[in-house]
Length: 95
Image (cartoon, rainbow, N blue to C red; front, side, top):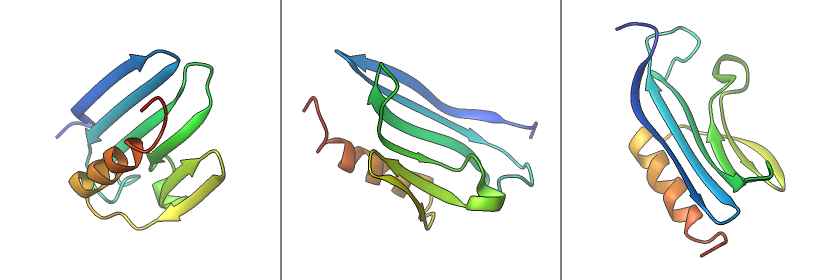
């Protein structure tokens, strides 16, 4: 495998909200879980309502970002994390 292999990439806009998903498989030592990912939902003005990522996995682990702050989470696996993101997303505006 090269440095990254795109598994899923999606950007959807609904009114003033944007959902962006980027999941890349990797064998990079920087990402021990085997993925470089961002699951993001926020406003087009840049406000984060919900985001899961591992941008700094070696140093900070996996993170959940909300308007209230950032918390480290246990990585349950990619599919389980996507399901968690989608479930939490259904409780946010503009729904």
